[in-house]
Image 1 (tube, rainbow, N blue to C red):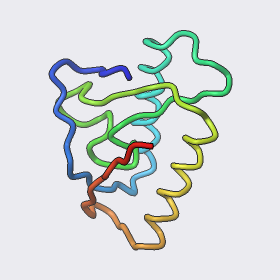
Image 2: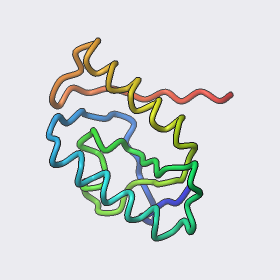
Image 3: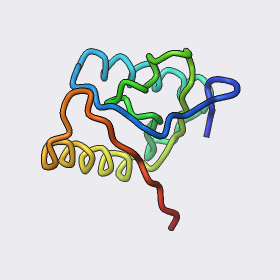
Image 4: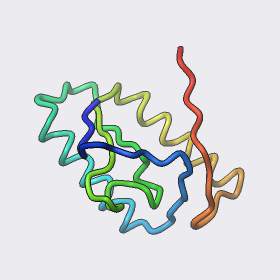
Length: 106
């Protein structure tokens, strides 16, 4: 995992953004950093970022560069994004709603 900023402080509470321009800009910035630091990215992988581009804590947040990127399995990355998108809709996670991410190991 590439930690773009030094001395990162990743927030444990995230807030959803429904601003598609912000989400796209954050995804583009994270992808740029992924391609810059991870060369070459295998064809079966895609760039993943955390915090998510769909949150206010994404790559356009202050302090600048306080996020992580990594090339991950493309199908798993797409599946996770689709599942999170469905969760936003199904559980009515609206603009600026807070949520936590709990990661489990395999």
